[in-house]
Length: 88
Image (tube, rainbow, N blue to C red; front, top):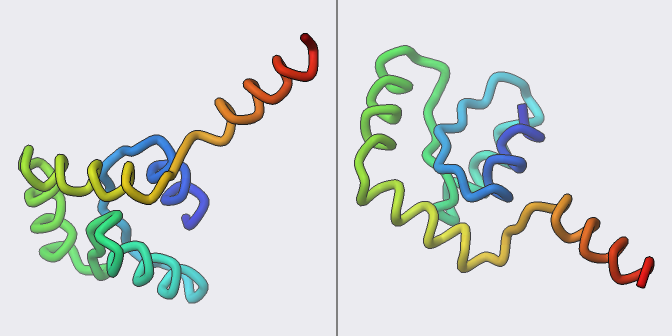
């Protein structure tokens, strides 16, 4: 689902995203257009080709660099840092 995609992006995990519900197309299209993930249609051969492409070290590096450049981060780390600051 969409939340899983956003979690993967926040953790800088290269991902193939496949829209399976009506509300997912726009989110996945936006992420793919920004080169944050690979998009595959719900078609076995397309998904396989994207998974193969995702295994390439250069593709993984490009996606991770783009995720880093967007300032995406793990929200849990941010919250924990803020809680620690409050407790000091």
